[in-house]
Image (cartoon, rainbow, N blue to C red; front, top):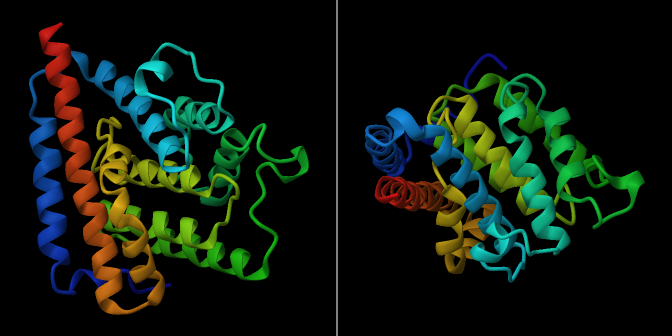
Length: 246
């Protein structure tokens, strides 16, 4: 591809404003003085809360306090925690080896939920393979804002159900990796998964709009993801405040 495949999205009504608002929110977080000395602690807590929220979106009923105490044996939660623990190491690989990283995320998330032969393999469907190839090409070619790219990554992986039975966990992990590797959230501070959990009542409709291919639906999904990111920033600021209080 020679032209940026996501460039037309940036000209759609409402996208530039939503992207700018999410960028301002992240910039406000990055200016927080707690991060001068405690960014690693904020990142660790963000990853924990992100894993909890991502598993909750897939049906986990565990509380955050139970997860923190190590008292949750649910396979979906354990898988989300394994994914969270490896994200920092996968962030460098993601920009150049998308398919390999997705396979690893699936292997981590789906342990105890599928057969060993299926771990690390997308659903065996020709259309799934084709769309994953297109997604990899898009990621290699686009310089669109990170939040837009992350929204497309997440929507495609969930819509395809490419990595059942944990496609949602894999999709949100891939979205976080996109935010890290494209420089919006390089230290993995934003708990955008919590934002999606707070907006879960709107998620199905937003995804349905994206899948429709209609312009309004695609815009709606990207704006949904921008809103989730802003809520995730609010959660991260709460983490900073808790650390500051000691």
